[in-house]
Amino acid sequence: MTSQIPEADWRQSRRVHELLLERYCAQILEEITEVANTTAATAHDRYLRIARLIEDRDKDLAQAFDDFKRSTAVMKLAIMRRMGLLTDEEMMAFSTQIQDKIRGISPPVSREYTD
Image (spheres, rainbow, N blue to C red):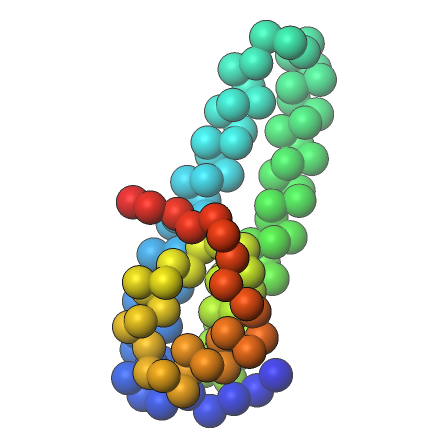
């Protein structure tokens, strides 16, 4: 989906992009730590789980954050919303037009991150 995004929303989307990328990477590191610290599996099993986790999360990260440009911003924000990264409060920083587009692509999720 390509969509023209107003300048103010584009500036806001670039700001939130960096914030949400950091948030997502922190979540992944927490997941890795949890797997690494479990005593219910061998070191090799934990290593394999971490490798698969990183591979899966890297695909999600690429889908949401790579190739972020003006023509893809609304779709990428909707993906971030679907992933539970873009909060209601952060959505409010965008114009009603962009909020409606994001919601039209990706309905709100129940899980939100807090800093």
